[in-house]
Image (tube, rainbow, N blue to C red):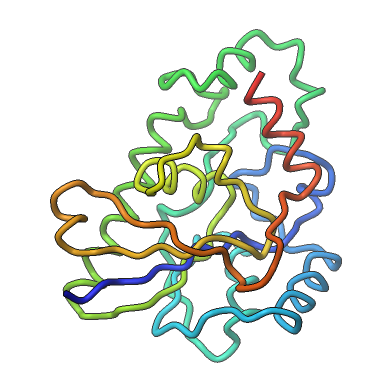
Length: 222
């Protein structure tokens, strides 16, 4: 039976990543250092050949797709954007540490949302629906290999929900410009809505978690 391959790739590094800020729907670009790192990854390691590419609508993902796959059209999926952090956009954990609502939110209580932002439950529903529509489209059109350019939170959430082997959400964290390859078997997908995570992207890279992103993760794990 035909299987379907999707490569999840996190966008290139932004100044928000360098600063350890919460950057969700703020449309900030890949920084100069991030562009250099993407080009270094591309020259040192191999990204897979794909038939189609999909991206979050935010410029940091679109630019990353353009660098890695310069000759391919980028299909924009609006609902693959990062979580909306509302009034906390651009803030660091230390700036929010005295806010009781922030501490409720980082425990991932489903209905808690940042002021004027998005709850984890709404974020989860949105991105899962968008991803399942991508899979449905691939199967219907017999497109067997694609790449999805998205955000750290989007990739971690989708892999923790659908991925085998099962792992906690932050165990799926990856560096900018890196990600995971997954294999979707139609029968297993239709029955259990799961896929196999089988390789890191790009092939041969260490795929380490970027330092300040790791600090944000520690904050959630407290």
